[in-house]
Length: 86
Image (cartoon, rainbow, N blue to C red; front, side):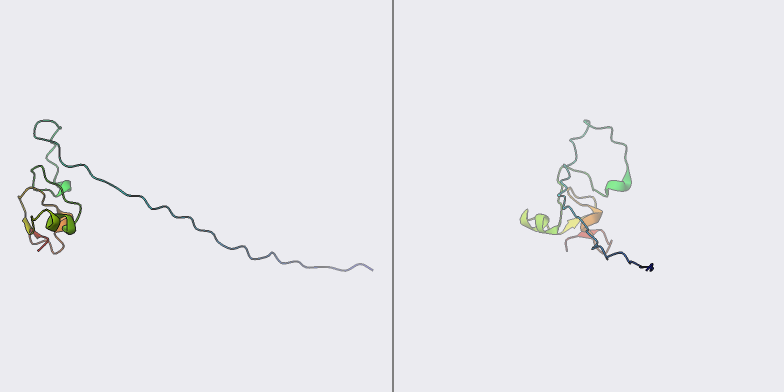
């Protein structure tokens, strides 16, 4: 006796692998030590201070930080009014 058997593939679970990466950004180099291209992309107000977030600004006692002040960055100014960590 000859018959036809139909087999369906088993479901295979989807595996997703993630990796958490910590990124640290170095503070601006002192004046005269970089190519100083004048790019507006950094959003910094110049100076030698850099703050990763408003918690760091407050811990340093520098809040609020105004556009043009050392340590100002667009990433700290959520509403774009020129005053960060208000």
